[in-house]
Structure formats: structure tokens, C-alpha cells
Amino acid sequence: MEIRKGTIPRLRSHDYRSLQTYFITFCVRDRTPTFNSKPAADIARSVILEYRERGWFYVLAYAIMPDHVHLLMRLRSRDRTLSRIVATIKNRMTQYGRGRDIPIRWQWGFHDHVRRPSESPGDVAQYIVANPVRAGLVVDAADYPFCGIIDDWTATQADPV
Figure 1 (spheres, rainbow, N blue to C red):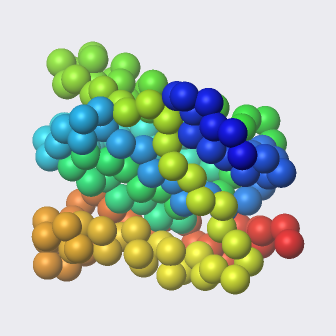
Figure 2 (cartoon, helix red, strand yellow):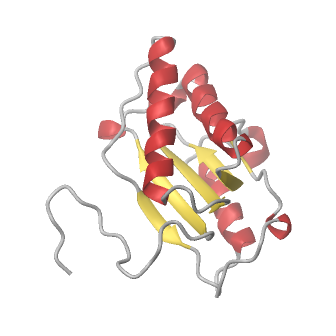
């Protein structure tokens, strides 16, 4: 597979509008610990929840780390590609930050992993919320205000096989 400079490889045969579950990660430019600031982390969480409430996706789990964001999401509509959703989230966080004099600058692109039928969404969700513990930010994930499991996996439709 040829990869052009400045592009991030995606699965060629995958439809990124499909109503599946994705584990995505997007990083702050130069890995600057922007979200060490509570106001910045509040912006990130509020934007994720805003688009969840708009019905764009379910949030199975999230973790807003000092220099990146993890999100286990399941698309709810084929109206937008995964790339468009992530770009919108990042842009909205940047706009809200600008309005509060909080610079949020993103690394280009994002990493995605399409959940496979053999992977337990509960295990992936637990992995995500344990990130602050593994990073040494807290001893117990319940003590970290910027991570959690929101939507019950069983309440969402199963991934197509």
C-alpha cells in the first residue's frame, strides 16, 4: 500500500460511514499537555457530550489525557464519515478554547481502530478508562474526572458481522 506524505492509512475496504464501533485517539500538537488545565479538559468533555447529544454517536468510553483524547464511539448515522466527525470535534474544541483564551492546537489526523467481532467492547472501554491510572495521574480511575463509560454497550445495536 502506498501512503502519500501527510496521510494516515485507513482500511481501503472499510466504509467509514458504517454504524460500527471505533476506538479513536487524537493528539495535541507536539504532545503539549493542554488538558492538564481543568478548563481545557472541561471543553473537551463538553464537546464530546454535545455531539453525543446531537445523536452523531454513542460514547461507550472516553479519556481526556493531558496531551491526547481517547474515545470509544459507535456511529449512530451514516450521514457523516468518521473523519468528518473527528474533524468537527477537534474544530469545535479549538473554537471553544479560543473563546476562553485557551489555545488548543491539534496534531494532524487521528488514529482509529475498527472494533472486530472478537474484541469485547467492555474490555476496550475498561482499557480506556484505566489510562489515567497507567499514566500515574490517579490511583483509581474513579478519581479522574475526565474519563468514563457513558452509554451502555448493550443499549446500542450490535456491530454488523
